[in-house]
Figure: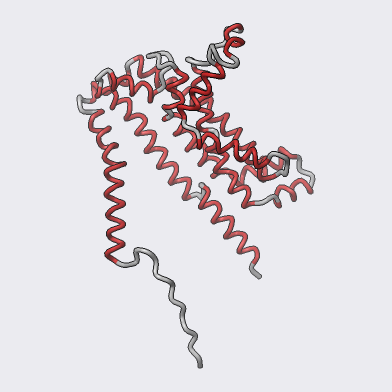
Length: 297
């Protein structure tokens, strides 16, 4: 009876106890300094003058209007970007057409351009001296320094989020299920709602959560196109900056606590969705596992 030699797995970097503890300790240290410490400071400073002062800051008309502008922007930008991401992912992964690679490049552009540059670009498009400025002025349509400009800038910055979550997953899933449904007589819309959408629902929700968090926290592009008009065109991040420059540190931290709470909720939702298989890596791993299981005899 011959004994088959067992293969030993090659050692991984950090398998030694000293290196492993050093890596874990370094990660925890920088995580505490860079992430946890600012969140703790926001919580402490926000309630530093008492709950009554905190409530007064949140109830201030300027703060309430900033919250309203932020929520209104998200309610418009997120659904539009969700529809755009779905349409782009469906077109890129399920059809072959000229310009497909170019469309992929266009989707990635907002990630390679500074938000402030995007805001300045909107000034040269919709401003009074811009491309469409005189036409809009003649029609008495106000884009910049109003809600439409804030929405447009936020949509530009967050346009890739949903599409980037859907495209890799839909590419890995292939077109077999859709082609089978259409061969059985299903229409395009029925195929989409009965086959495509159920297979990507968690990745879609994952992208929507990330898109919403970025819309509510966007500062650079919005600061250019909004005009920073207190009580009129300020979103919550811009209002926080104004309070800080007015030496109202407690008010700034109180307003910042709203965005910090949103960040924590987003992280919790992100982790919960990843456990359901959302996100590109878990979803792609699940697809690969199903494909491997299907090829086994």
